[in-house]
Length: 342
Image 1 (cartoon, rainbow, N blue to C red):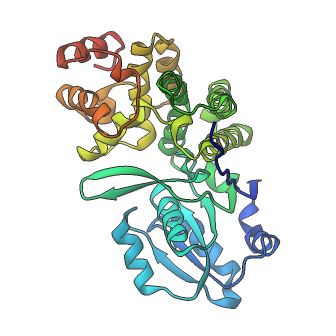
Image 2: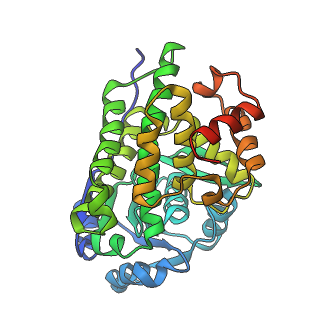
């Protein structure tokens, strides 16, 4: 087995009010220079301005991120200079843009999520948009992750449920990774176990997550971090991304308005059926957590669902259960009806 380089976050801080510790963390990490704070139109008022105020003595730059894309990174690079490190305060678009910007500039990145909606808050992966397509790239993991439970618990519940669905889909992602191993692909028992443990933690915490109890939100956040770290361990999204994520990427190209985790959850119900896994447990867990379980919940039609699943294995070269099944539109619709998706 060839050696591979592992780079992980140096600091993970989870708790109430930990945003106020960001300057202290930057000193511990010996980060120098002026920070660039990236945030979103909504998250600016939620936490972005708070972080900016923590560095008021050096007047940090702040930019509002509109989308996660190369053009957005280029726009920010054209406006900003003399930056020592980047702090991303927001959701998926902000975090991914921050990671990509920091990677391009070869400077550290600090992840400050405002919603527990996806495992990208801790991974070395970024999801970027190029014209009508979204695809995953490798960048660098955050130097630090500052997860303030008070901020995360105040996020709209839909975002919390989406984060749960993203983690629950690890069950089918790891199964697909094992299929890839049979084709000679590198496989890590440890990374796979960490990914599955993250899913189990979420499933066991459904009740307290629904109630937005501190322990429940903490369990979800720690599961998201663990899932992200499992990807950094192998330098690939494989531990947490299989056919269900490919299905989600196709829906993105079809201009779906659903959230990433919501799409992955639906995809996981379908692919679990193909894999011979307990798809009912996955579906029931998603339903209980309040995540979508039908195509109608996602806002897509029967034809759109079938088209996305038919084309999922064409979006990237990654061996999954879709490569082992002879699927056509009618078969996909039959399975979707059997599993309650349609």
